[in-house]
Length: 101
Image 1: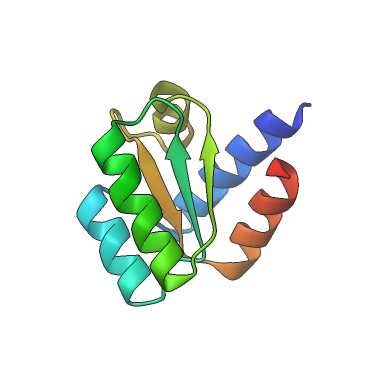
Image 2: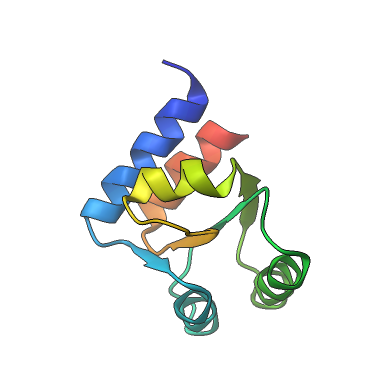
C-alpha cells in the first residue's frame, strides 16, 4: 500500500472519529481557536481560498500541506466537493504528516 493510500485511510479514520473540521468557515474557526493541528489543502483549490487558508495557518503557526485533488480528498472523508480539511487531533495530525513528508 502506498503512502498516499495510507494517509487517505488515516483521514478516513479521523473523519469517523469526528476529529476533523470541513468547510472554509469551520476550518478558519478551528485555526483561530487553536484546535486545528494540521490543515490539508487540495492541489486544485482556488487561489483566493488557498491564500486565505495558508495566511491563517502561517499567522497561527498551524502546519499545512497541499495534497491530492479535491475529488480524492472528498472521497477520503465521504463528502462531495471538499477542498480543504483541518485535523483536530494531535495523533492523527502527526501520523498524516509523517506519511506526507
